Image (cartoon, rainbow, N blue to C red):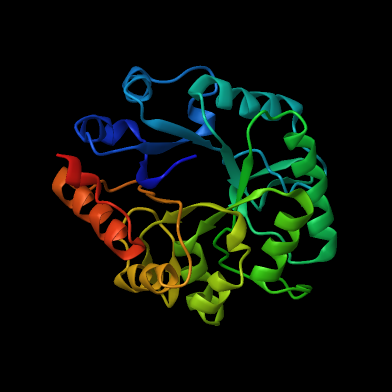
Length: 271
């Protein structure tokens, strides 16, 4: 399993990551390695760096069922990368025959739980490694919601025996946009099933906080991680960055800030 602080592997920062001897693991978008790993990522893997595929297009919450080709490709990424686990989102990406084009939150209803459970079990039956499920950021909520965010995630995790990918930046964004205490929400998640944690930055625009993955991690998110680390142990954490990439020194400083908040070794310590 991944351990310590990692980062999302992207071609734009491949050279920076290759130069970090203290880097023990990376996450890669599963759809980008369905037909093989880029040479720079393969070199990291050969060096002993753990690679975890992270899907974004499987649509585990799609009520109309899963696309068999996408499932086959997703499952194949575990073998391609030699991964100890794979991860995907608690969301849907297709509806009514149309591609939504984004990870869309599900209504927190028992019917939606049933859909997730059915689809997750279908994928798990073909996987040789564990599957971790991520809680997503939601810019809106549904009037038919029957459960809190933590209750919804917990029921899905318990019924599927999946692992939890806790996106603490998403928990923070949802609390900021819809109210609630992010620490209480995080603590109510099934942390005993925690595989790893996502950390990312965002920006506020017209009173709405957007989880952009293209800004520095909010100090309030770092404080939230610190408060959580006093109450539970994080096996691993990773920084998501998907645009507006900072210079190497700033990225490494951000990784070290996450490590300090989570009580983990710094990535730069081995340099």
